[in-house]
Amino acid sequence: MIKSQKDFFSGLMFAVVGGGFAWGATSYTIGNGARMGPGYFPLLLGIVLAVLGALIMFYSFVENTPDGDKVGKFAWRPIGYVLGANVAFGILLGGLPSIGLPAMGLIMAIFALVIIASKAGENFVLKEVLLLATILSVGSYLAFIVLLKLQMPVWPTFITG
Image (cartoon, rainbow, N blue to C red; front, top):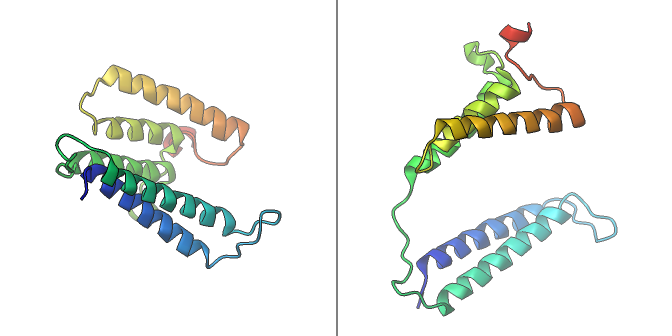
């Protein structure tokens, strides 16, 4: 008898995703510990995730919860905002040539990502969101442009020319 539905279904999700990754990794060369192939890490990660899922599923049968820890209704609004934020980030970072939208750059993309994704939460405080976006923009600029020297637009093309 399942005593915690949340634990059972989250463990099932981990086990299925981990098993899928492990199975998909078998189509690559695995190698061994000394000479790892491209499938070695995904295989091990998939196995670890599947085992973790199995342990969580086992825990759902053992751990007593007062109300059975039922799974609530699906949270569509947060999922929509988070997925939409990631899509907006990708479009703003690289542009969308098919409709003539130029690349807006890393800074604008990060600000859009943070503002849209923060709407998924319960509390939206614009001052805090803009502070977080600024910190993430500066950190991303330093990490990706300055330190890693990646070639990507930082500012919109209409500003930089």
